Figure 1: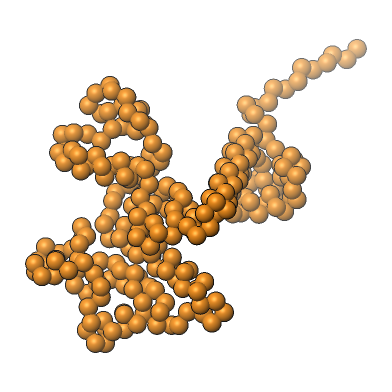
Figure 2 (figure 1 turned 60 degrees about the vertical axis):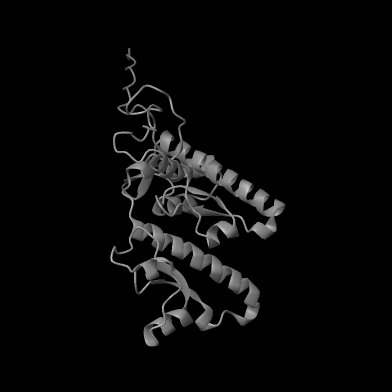
Length: 247
């Protein structure tokens, strides 16, 4: 008489899926799943020559793809409604975390600040005193009281140190990229002349990163012609003359 042995309980709280199982579940080829792993789009652990996937990592991947699809849908809708505005997603020039919709006009004026950074800027302008704390966005309450405040996205951007040089360099890069895109569309197959290509170059007086053409850079280096700069930015030296600051 044989006695049935009780099943050995699994040591893992949740099962692990093979690459083939994930590919079958998502309706793609096995090599596609392996490529997603190499690109870091889906989390997996390497076991021998294959991968194993937790249900949580597969679910996170699906949710992220759904967010991307919704992002593309909103962008396409904006482009259809107002094609002249040239809607596109741009990363915040200050925290470099949040991506949001901007128009060509926004990018040309470098007005690319996310909701979190705008709130912080407004808070610093209204309460320029160190004893008035910035609200704790994670808990939804002020650090000095229990009064609820409106939550905003991206907690990472609040702890990241702000660098004026990095921010203004990003502003200039966004502006230069947009100006080059507009010039490329206007030029068509002829292409943009080398001297009219916009690049990022620092001001020779205050070191502010500027979006200027290559011709302007050459004139500033060879003929000592000043680049068009107002010298008004947090990184400007304190010894500028009133004439220079008034430009």
